[in-house]
Amino acid sequence: MKIMLVDDDPIFNFIVRKLIESTKIEHELEEYLDGSEAMEAIKQKKSPDELPDRILLDINMPKVNGWQFLEALRHLNISKDVSVTIVTSSIDGEDRRKAFSFPEIDEFLIKPISKKEIAEILNK
Image (tube, rainbow, N blue to C red; front, side):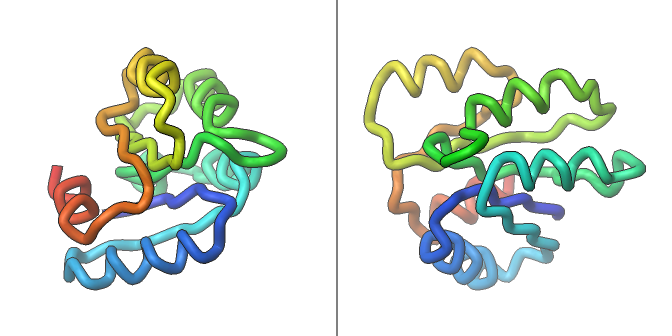
């Protein structure tokens, strides 16, 4: 499984990396601290097989936030169904409603997340 983690908090990324490793699910993980870096990485991929299967995406990031990232992803017209899980500290109900207006979003999780939640996401 190819996983892309997009979050501007290096400590959160470290924790998520360790949680993913602890699940023993075979994976390739790419980490990005900004939505623009992650979008550039996606644009550089030459085939659908190189694209992530799952993106774990924060909403509130500087430069390019999660919403802007999702809009840009929509306009790429990629030929692979990439599942996106929002992982955020936001408890705003409007953020949850907005997230599910994107068909790519299949989960909305509030930080911190557990090993169980990570395992459930990756096993979908």
